[in-house]
Length: 614
Image (cartoon, rainbow, N blue to C red):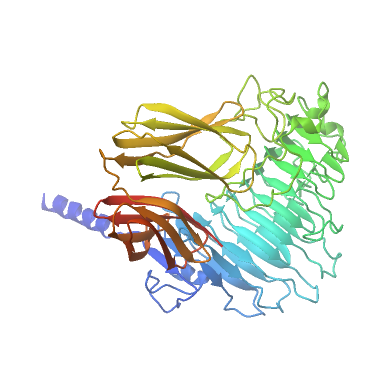
């Protein structure tokens, strides 16, 4: 009995002695000799390799970071031997609401093949919300620079990362890097203009796994590649399994920022294989992807002797073929369904592309009228705050297009009687409007409601609804929407006869197809014959200055507290409110993003959202 109790106690000691997950911080003003706490942060990203274990999380504070390694370094940040688990990954991410940038444009490299960030021998690592930029190519042209290189690293998630202005390659999957997910990542403005071996401009790709790499089972989802001097996505000479979902590749094969012809210029270069033994093996699956205005082909087999599955993709105005699959004889039977080509030099080449239910299989003539827009302006716009792709009208189908419901069920989500052709499903239930804020204030017995959208796509109207109990809503008014917009649009409505007591307001946002969603609920209270509520008539942060215009029925003191999206207080101040209108200005330092301001008086409190625009 004593031995059993001893064993049980030892087990409990072992259980509770396991280290709890820790949190670290990195800041441009920190020091690697610090403890890595929020008040004493580290200075470099690479320091995290020496302290993090499974379950730990590190927040990288906003600001600009510079290399400590020098111009001759082969690597400027090394994350090595970070071993998380499926249940306890290691997370390195931007501090909520802040934007860290690893900027190497202050050095002229003397190393032939430098890499900005190497991820080596890491498993179950999740990095998110970082930008790496400015690593130029060595001026002699004897090598190329690299953005992020995964080496012998598997089961990692690379999310919401921006790589730009790199003198060579962007994201690289080297040997032994398997089962990784690249989610909502961007690669843009990359070229190797100085290259002397093999020709300038032809060795820069946005996302690549090439040269016989053994990497396999990797997925790219929601990623973009543009203004790359060679190819957007390149899988030259690998036998691994790769999946592309909802990715965009455009303006490639040109000198970045211009349409001056330079490298190959394929949107998605999907081959060739490496071994020559995978003829009947499915290695590449591409769905809901978009390739447009590339110098050469949108989707290119590039001599890949393997099986491909291309479902619901769109190619547009590519300089060569939309779909180029004419290299192999005898060719494997490929799976091409629900794909769309419009205004390419030619829709396709090769019998492998025949498939079924594609735009070239007959019965449909595609015109500009099938789309909400055929202008690609704005496709390189900043991502949404959650990292998702920006909402645009480009190449989205009109509700009355003959392409709607003209596809076949391939296992992808769809609405209506049948899937549509192309990358975008019309009326897919995801309302293409980005609501920036919806807020309200009580003033002189009326409810002043204000809202704005950051983008609109096929949006019809806003129904303003009111409730006395927060559950049963009635229609007050309908406000017409701009409809299609990539810039902020502002709206307002005044309820001149609010209910005595608490009023609950919400918006029902309706698109042209009848799809709808609801906004957040705004609460405004009114007392009988009393107008003692404060109100915010306008608010915002511009150039690090908080601006508030507050209405108050009496002279009183207010506490003003500013919070970021995570709830962290950034500022607390007092203000004397006049009876009437008071304008308040306070200096603040904050990155672009959405914040919240809470105003507290003896009569109550009011919280309003703020958007910082710099």
